[in-house]
Length: 336
Image 1: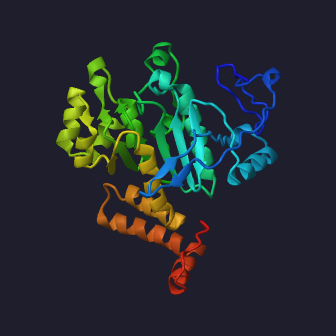
Image 2 (image 1 turned 60 degrees about the horizontal axis):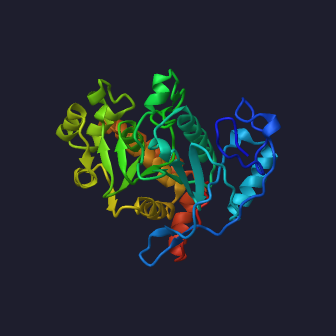
Image 3 (image 1 turned 135 degrees about the vertical axis):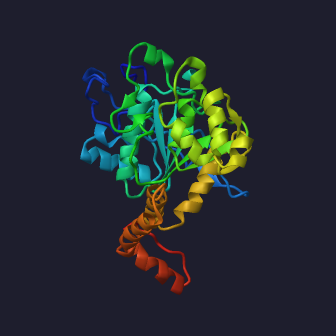
């Protein structure tokens, strides 16, 4: 079945979508697709696909409470459903993967991308079993920036809360990793800069070429880039519009891990697995301290650290950590 904007819609787990997204006359159930897990740990320790990804939509706003619980139960038991969207969301354990899926448009950001990313992030933030997210792009390009055709047509490509891509101005609590294979240019780089960590392949390039079209990188690139690169390198990129290679981005600190082409998502999953062995609330509040302590005085930074430390001390996981150490076993984190 196809919705009014040409996307397949699986409705086994969805109620008839409203707000003109899918007309009620188009509603028809379709069997759930069931497959094996598509990520496993290989000999190298990386997580690799063993079958084509089957995308898992978790748009809580589009389902009734009963249907969401039914869908959520199926998802957690390994059954999967597909819902083709501009942004697909898949789940691997405690990790959510958000894939911009417009390869025919070089994953350019239009209103659908921004709207769906924001909705998926709402689900991600609201699900206590999801601890970390990965932002990726389908196809040979990570993201080519804003959809200029949509802009020229007078369409708004931002959301009210998240801004560009539903992410650039998003206030969130959980960490995000950008998995970059191919070019991340203009708004694509600004999506990367909206994340907390970056894994990139040697096929990646990073740039803000807006000045070449008499534009500004207005989704955070001009003030975020100097925070992750030496200021003179960031200034050069902003004024020439020329990109830098993945190797240069890695050498200067924009990229955390550099891998071979096609391996960015696997390496991002590996990094995520190294984070999810830790207590999720301690991870979340450690991130908040790092973010909120940027450009403040030491006295303010001490105050921020103390505030979030008290929150960690009040959790059940704070008791579990030392107990697991004493009993010489792996901790069983609950996120509470």
